[in-house]
Length: 110
Length: 118
Image (cartoon, rainbow over all chains, first blue to last red; front, side):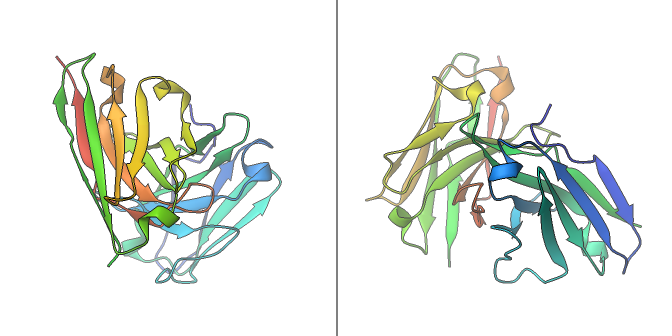
């Protein structure tokens, strides 16, 4: 059971928008930055978002995130078939003094 | 080019030991905290451990405390994970990553596979 809760799967059509939620608590999301990662099949994870909606160089602005209280949400607009992947949220948990990930969400672009 | 290259994975019996290495290049290694993340077969990502740039501060997930040790040699631009008293549940692909989970791990290695089995 992951400390952060994500839906196991989401789906949407090409060109549409999808959101992926990440629910935590005051000891993690509520008081720490959240980062988001994309993992394409058979590859290492890639950083998408960090430090309150910042994107590394090369990540398009189709990817964004927002946070409210103890929950964070990744948004992806203009869905492409190449976006099919597993997505993970992660943050620091101050009570555990450890990093924590969500269980991951599989995105299917229909 | 910023790059991380893990090595040292393999098959080990329960109770055995293994040392993973992560060779860094393309950035000032000593200026950055580093992390280890693992992924069991068919499962999600699990944060394992992190270390400050100087090596003076280390952090671990509860399930590995006392068995896995993270350390670094900044003169060799290399991160390590010493794995002792290995268990079947430690079987996973182990990734090293540049940075911390809270500020974003922006560079990842290709991963090295550890299999704990008799």
